[in-house]
Image 1: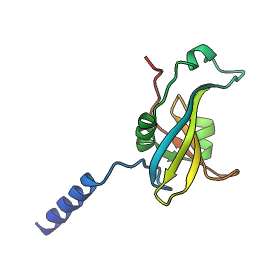
Image 2: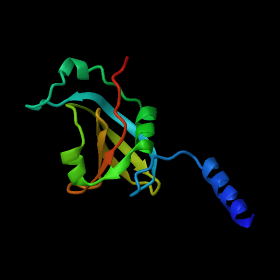
Image 3: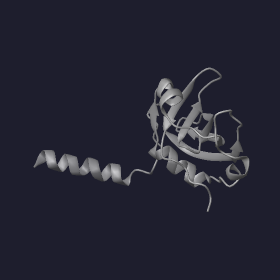
Image 4: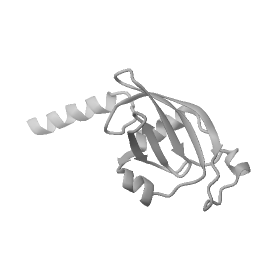
Length: 131
């Protein structure tokens, strides 16, 4: 009974905690989209500039994406995940007050640029085009 009560208290505390985006390296408090629908020409891509222009991403949708994303290795991010030529970019603020730039591919590949040489690589759900 004590174990069950402790579990119940833990679940109640977790359920009442505010929603936060959840890469494991940091706690995200705020996400801001600076630009979406950015098209990047690549020789082996089939995305068009016109189709990419229809890709819109709100701060709220980006926050939801980060909450569902998981960290992956750089190798997995570069070699195993799908990518598109269409992406969004912005900034996020962590619980300790630091601000980082991020970019997010419409296919669900993202990265947070911790410094000029270090990134946290993320994989999450695919982002739909605006209807």
